Length: 124
Length: 402
Image 1 (tube, rainbow over the protein chains, first blue to last red):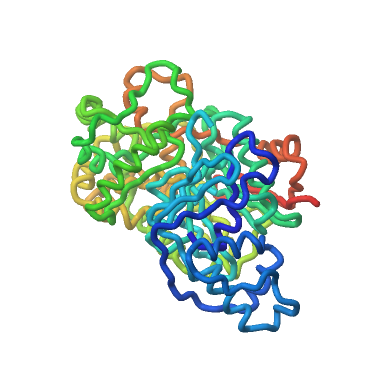
Image 2: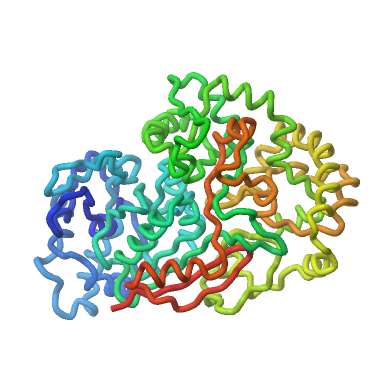
């Protein structure tokens, strides 16, 4: 699971307050870093779509010092260094084993072999 | 959604592709191919609102067994689209090339040959199985909703993965495993039965055409270059799954059309051929099941949503000249053709059929206009941009309003 994916994920346990399922807290047992070709335009277009704070928290929780500023830099489109750091965090870091925890309900969703399983059980 | 083994996840490298499926086993296959995937429920998507530009649902919602579930699936997909984002939905059509399904709600046999070897290898598994019910007390939705086709490229170590998979799946009956007893019964019952259900012993050239087309589909760039077709496709009788749309650019087999036009397709004309074929295919099936499992995998090309079609019988067409005689006039190979012949209407089951239901898949096939109406009447957040009939499927493209 890449951190870009994580940024899109939200818990859907029934009965949460609106927005209460986001962001999921990552508990990572195994993390992998793999290079991915850099595409500045692509990363740049992602910026407005991201929940920035959640991304920073996620990066922190993986034990890597956050190389991301508290907010996207102004004129980020032209800032290649910024974009490269963002690219790295979003696409090159993967959680292979661990779990995702719903902030409100505490419900955990497992990640195994890089695949999160977001299914709820029958009674949920 | 319903990505299966990731058939469409690599078609556009310019976007971030995320595949989702209910079935862990299939998703793991996609993962091995390097796709970014997750396991989730189409009816309850684990995404925040309005975060995707595009969603595709190819051969998925026809597996939901009630209208409400189908609506829910579409609404969920609409929810996660950004305003202006688009969704493409493909479903099996009731109206097939020159034929129709008798009813809209059907069980279609799933190619057990792909699955039985693996499952019977699991006889050591601690009896995790789900009995097929006589009668209707299993909600059709609980039967096979997604196809878990464990193909030959699985490594032995996936056996343990399979059991894990079963643990997840069984409560939802994602894939049904039948007991040893039923397995034996089915095998005994089944040579002739299986051939009825599964054998589409086809003439050599039709099979080769099909496999050539399948190979052609591996071309990347076909998707990227083609715009989504708006016009009615030629009703090519080769159902190429949902890549069919892409092939509008290519020339479809004129041969097939010529044959079909000269054919009057009254049922009686089909049955003699089918009967004769049953006999022929019995032999063919024995051989092919034993030998061509590897071939099957390459034939089916990894993906999952919808094709039960070519079951690998007589794949090499070795020495079946009689078959081709019967098939001269019907050389078309509709992937839903075998489904048409072997589909069992929900509610129509006999005991014999019930026992084979362990490997049936539920379909609600759509009439013309039904998918559009479903969206127009129930999903106001979507606006339909275009719709068409494509190789045995109804499809629509819709945009999220706002």
